[in-house]
Length: 208
Length: 412
Image (cartoon, rainbow over all chains, first blue to last red; front, top):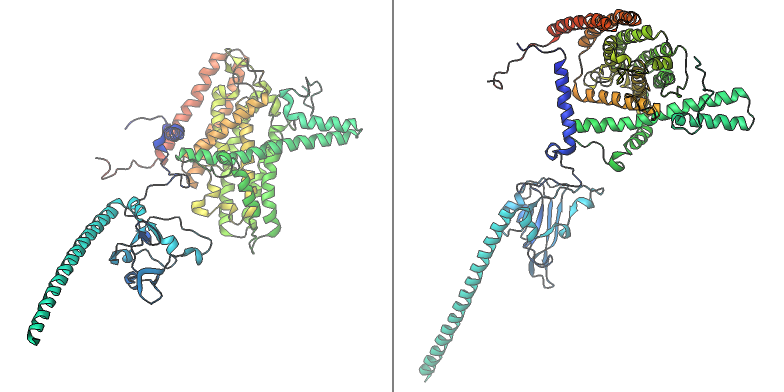
């Protein structure tokens, strides 16, 4: 057994705390606390709470949401409320007139973002949502839910770029299909016109 | 020697040495100039002098409550309070406002009058004790001839008020806490007084200003002739230091308010400003007991090095006070709370025997030094204190140290 002076352990303890105190003044790595309101810890891409809506380009017209109401139906606590926007003839404009999420009801399950077929709704990284108005302050409408695609890209780069690539490919495919369709329609029309002309001549012949 | 309240020959009204007495002197001069009777002048003077001391230490209490939190935070690698004002400088103000605006709850089973009296009675002795300490060459608020005796007599009142608080709350935790507090404080008061006794023996006086004056001068030109620089003084000073931690109810001896076991001890049933008064009493008591320790062992207001006499003497006192208080904070940040049985055994088996040994050591030291055998004094007193200390420490370690732990997976 090592022979130690009685009380040596006490002094060792004092040395440890003293070192802690002195080094806390000049060693950055000692102060591990993030000084919250001034600085923020980076949030993980897997961080997810309350949903938001993505728009491309303009906030009013560029919404990806088509008001299909799948998320509204899937939402377990029923916190989403959607009204489809229609023109004066009652025809669907394929965009939401009202899109409300009651954050006091939402349970952050993320099912809405999983079921959305239009890549429109995603879980947000926002966490400073406290308010003194527990009804109006927590009922988010389109104005507070709509966020740009760039925001999504910044929040979750991997997911957003994957979505963007897929949407671009889809769009190209769609454009190609449209072009093919248009060409086909043209060809169809031409052949139809030809057939009609032929039929006309035949009719003429018959009648003659 | 003349120890009357106001030294007759004062160099100048505005000299730094007399700065703390300036309010008192001004009030006296103003009252004399308007022709007030002599008794009124002296009473007003004493009132202002007392007010100065209370004001200084109330301010120091506010400051310490912030510095303590800051220091503990730094030891734990945090920043500490930094929201109220510049670097949290207004934190004591915010705490005070919070304490004042809190609801004052008196339990239904409490003894109403005693419940109210206890927090007042706990601040009172601390303030009284602060009155007799010599803060500077010219600044002793009440220069009593029996100052040390007065200090100990008043200091014992703290136990009484703690017990009043525990009893009047009409609840179990305060009662248990108060009983623990009494047993602890009575046990540690014994070695505290015995350690102080050696100083009385050597100084031959109970007057605190006189004790400080006797510690003036330097050995070999640079070692201050403080009591702590003698073998018996070192031991007695250390004992006094440990006992003053226990008397002030500070960590690691803060069992009376052991929040993990008995909520907050005698303060459990208090809220609002009464609760704050308990803390104030505790901190003022801390100042008082540290001030007494400085007076008895650390040379009071004497400068630590020769040639520093141009600095006002009260500066040295408060510098030493700050260092002692800081050491208390450091200890609080380091050691865990002791158990009650360890605490009592430590007091009765270690502190009191060692404190009793300092008495013959102090006597031998004085006798041999008076006879001119300085070297012989060292040769006799050092073994007299060192050998029993080693024996006690070894026995104590054997008995109380927990068996060395073996960890199955961590050590390999």
